[in-house]
Length: 342
Image (cartoon, rainbow, N blue to C red; front, side):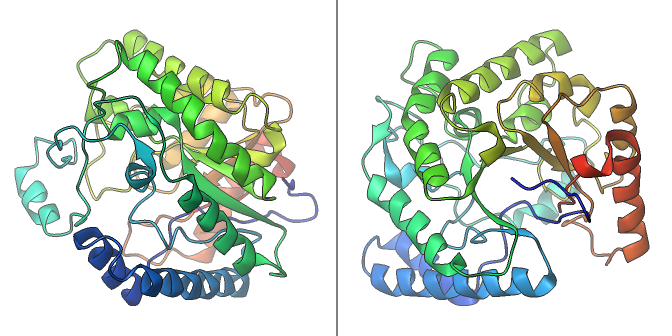
């Protein structure tokens, strides 16, 4: 992956708004699998081409397919893996019981794709061809695009386990390692296709306020250490410089006051093999955390991708504010070690 040498490079987190046509056909596919699949695939190809063009036009350096063919960044694995026939979990809340009025308002914006069955059998591939088709679509759309590099996202074993609960394996650890062995195949295929692999690891931060708020911090740290170890196991043969990982507290419109602080998890996050770490850094709950890097030594060969534009604000942030955010990070880790993200 490129370093920011003569200027600060730019990228984003992965998911870009789906076109209306794609949304319509994803919903149709969900209700009646296969009936309009060819239409869906054509609409996805068109949407990917469109978002690739838009990213280049904006001047983004490291671009992707906008995840156009997926309902979200995790749940698509359901259709591709075996072992998920268990009962469906209730929809996830925002993790903020103190604000019932907000929860009511947010219900109307909830994703229609809330199907989260538990794991009740051995996980394995049943449709690896779907993953390969995704990679191929992205590759074709980005061939010849004027950019520094391209990336493709895939959920980490710990994130899949956070989302789809274990009702089959003896322990959560065993389940996460089983997922690591299965997902390894997708991770390798993405890198082999020439993309930077972005491993989505919201679990490392979100498990705290969504699941383990009552646990002592030390116990929480043990849990996420296992998730990072399983991730490292899955990508043990891949070059670190062709990988990055994304950690976040969820882009929910929520108070976020129970979020774990980055200083309490960053040492564990940095043990991940990917050479770059992306995280939100432009919202009122986490923007001050650039100062953490005064004390945290960035390991040799690592770079950071702070999100310096916030995707959940209705404000269009002033370019100078965004520049200030970038400058804050550059001042503590060195400008060559910063790529500006969203």
